[in-house]
Amino acid sequence: MTTKKITKILIANRGEIALRVIQTAREMGIKTVTLYSDEEVGLPHCLAGDESFSLGSGPLKETYLNQDKIIAIARSCGADAVHPGYGFLSEKSSFAKKVKDAGLIFIGPSPESIDLMGDKKTSKIKIQELGVPSIPGYHGDNQEISFLIKEAKKIGLPVLIKASAGGGGKGMRIVYEENEFQQALEGAKREAMNAFGDDTVLLEKYITSPRHIEIQVMSDRHGNHFHLYERECSIQRRYQKIVEESPSSAVSPELRAKMTEAAIKITRGINYEGAGTIELILDTDGSFYFLEMNTRLQVEHPVTEMVTGLDLVRLQIMVAQGDKLPFTQNDIKQRGHAIEVRLYAEDPDNGFLPSIGTIKKIGKTTVRDTRLDCGYVDGNAVTISFDPMLAKLISWGESREVAAQKLNLALNDILFLGLRTNRDYLKRILTLPEFLSGTTYTHFVKTYEDKLQKKQASKEQRALAVAAFLLKKDQGKSVSSHEFKTNSVWERLSGFRNI
Ligand code: ADP
Image (cartoon, rainbow, N blue to C red; front, side, top):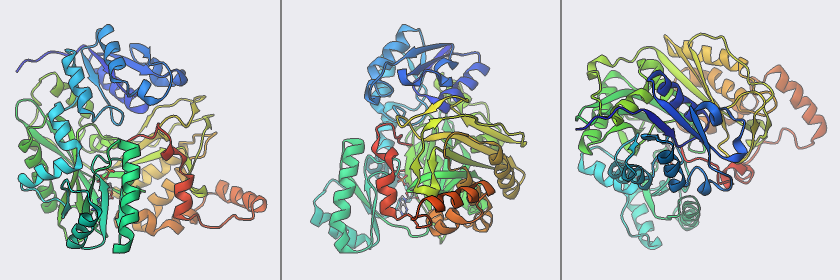
């Protein structure tokens, strides 16, 4: 095992995650290189590195997804490592391999691990071999519709059709009745082909009241595998996480022991290296199933950092340079409770329409034990070219209740003036009695749709609603899921990230 101290990291990403990597690299005395596309000039990540290079302009495949261009920049500026962040190239084994072949260190797992776990189909086969339960279903090669219908009936309806290469909830359809199958299959395949260039699907039993629980793992190159406990990410909208927390109110010490044991069985079984996340689905009877593994840093990693006190980016860098992780499992403690919310440039009270414009003022919070991971500063423009996530706000408290209270208070201070955001919607979630009691199933947002749209509106919102009512005669009509789809401009744009 050779160890080589990393001296300069090129960050193949943008926004808040680029800034997050810089923060740790700086603390470790490592130089950083950032990238930007021409339309991003003025965003903080462009100039935050010790050096910065333009990727030019054009579609993402010419910029943040252009593997050769990024590697050429890394080589020419003398970087010795590449951090992929999340989304973009972070789970492309071809990129990890090219980085290695160029003599650079990829801060992430091996291309083989990415290949094995990056595909929902191959990972499920491996997981079964390792004896970890996965959701009953079909994940074979036969894609004939008549065959798939037979399999769906064998599994028992409802079933979920999923894109094998899936991510970000794309290419997923629930089928309740046999006669809906064909249309759902066609829709899933079309969406999967558009998003991933691969329309292979798999079938899974649809768990009707699940919770999304995931285990953070970290493995070094010396055969040491650790878990950093669970995160619950059940509060989702259209299969995308919006609130994440650790610990989960649904996980008892006994269940935690079983889940973390399963996670370590996986990382050991595939000889994993670096940071990863084992996503599990928890059913109401306490049984849990493997959903997928993400072979990278997650958007929601700060909640784990808040409860364990560990810096996940530092651990990633240490692993990548061949260091032995400096702790035992017993040293890793879960203390207090942390909650994260994702602030988006969208208008929840108007069909989640995207919001673009110039940020007049972001605001600052003085609420203790909070953290804002944000890729913007006042005066920046938010456009439709990139992910609509503006920032992540995270709070910590001795208890879940205190963490939720602090987060709700801190949200008052994070304004993003000039844009419509989901801030008030997030506040409504955090103050809903059903959230506070911990009954957070993945259908939470759908179940409490009405309360989240209308209840606990702020004074400012009420005034706006009255004004809108006077102007628009259709005010007050609830937005149908069909309208959600057609309104979701972000989803039709290439910049929508796969996280
Ligand atoms: P993606 O990779 O597109 O994000 P996942 O497989 O990770 O897709 O699933 C995303 C979310 O969809 C999960 O967090 C969960 O809410 C829901 N989900 C996935 N599989 C099932 C299932 N079999 N039954 C019920 N819900 C599911």
